[in-house]
Length: 95
Image 1 (cartoon, rainbow, N blue to C red):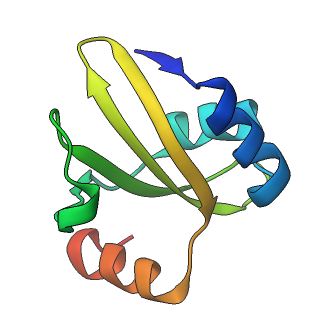
Image 2 (image 1 turned 45 degrees about the vertical axis):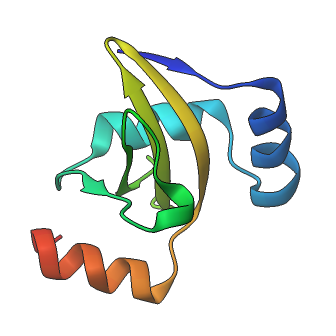
């Protein structure tokens, strides 16, 4: 797996969400639950948009949204998970 972060996404992550590349890497390394498919019409992609929640090494819980093409993982966004997202993930995976 290789993370791909476009310049525009990197800027949004840094400026709007204060999420670093290393935090993203930690979330992929620390993920316990599975992946969820984003089924909202405006977010449908081919291949599908996937997301998960995971903690950074510092305990920050992020929602990570991405598209995977083979070994490449194209990050779309990542930000502090809100209560609704935490509840959805907990119901599905118990974490």
